[in-house]
Amino acid sequence: MIVSHRSTGCRSLPGPRYDAPVNTKLIDKFGRHVDYIRLSVTDRCDFRCVYCMTEDMTFLPRREILSLEELYEVARAFTELGVRKIRLTGGEPMVRSNVMSLIERLGKLPGLKELLLTTNGAQLDKYAVALRAAGVNRVNISIDSLDAGRFARISRVGKLDKVLAGIDAAVAAGFERVRLNSVVMRGYNEDEVLDLLDYAIARKLDIAFIEEMPLGEASDHSREETTCSNDWVRSVIEQKYRLLNSAEKTAGPSRYAQVLGHDSRVGFISPVTHNFCADCNRVRITVEGRLLLCLGNEHSVDLRAIIRDQSRTFDDLKQAIIAAMDLKPERHYFYDAEHAQPVRLMNMTGG
Image (tube, rainbow, N blue to C red):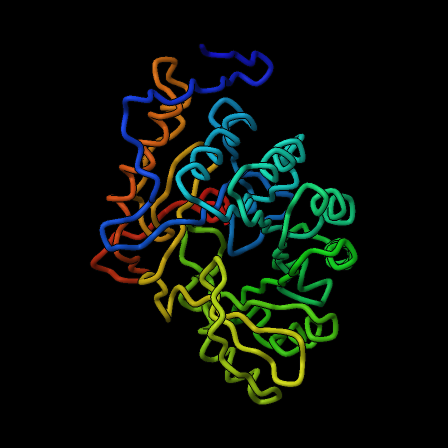
């Protein structure tokens, strides 16, 4: 039986056909086990960061994005197939209307071990306590400058004081970990590496430095001119601090080093200079329901078409996800002229 939800234009998919075999492992043809998804709940954002989107964005019409119920159905399918970690992304997840109702349901999914959130932090002063109560374990907060004027230049419209208040609220809410994310760009904030790390250390927070990713044309600058390698970032840090590489692995692509004498760890996410594809354990679901098998390639499957097809079942959705694993490419090829480069922006990809 199909249950219609007129208010959202979505439906709950019928249960599985029990005569249909269901694999319970998501393993690609290179032997990588996918147990982590990044689920985009919106392409919209209250910032317009220069590395993420254009200043004058056109966002998807409502009918093209997955409803909250549909997003939950996708998440449920993945957890039933062995996914143990879900990171909510956007755009900015917390600008989605009634998003807390989805987060509360996700936090109760059987088998889910970690519910994570990536945010610009501007809404955390309002939502941090509720997010923790809903089961969100860890929060990543983007902050690219500690100078209000420079922060405004990078985010175009963001207010630094709102983000700083959000960081304080996240710390007070008692998440298992709060991590700061900083995209380092030459000509924008490359002289703030140590200031940002000092800020994290003073609050006993982790921080990850991220190489600017060449996804779409988001700004007036050339990414090849502004990208700072994490080898360079690390060399700057080591002028002041001793770093000890950590063998600890997290759900994502960060490679961590402990700051000796302090509680903070420094993560390096280096998609341009240090390919981390060999042990990739994750896929992305865009807000319009595309299952993206790789950050830097266009291999994808339209899950929305299955969800909205009245003749398809929940088992069909799961089988489509399983079949999609064979499409996951071995690696991406950023800045390789012999390979097509992705044209979608980061807010459309799901950060």
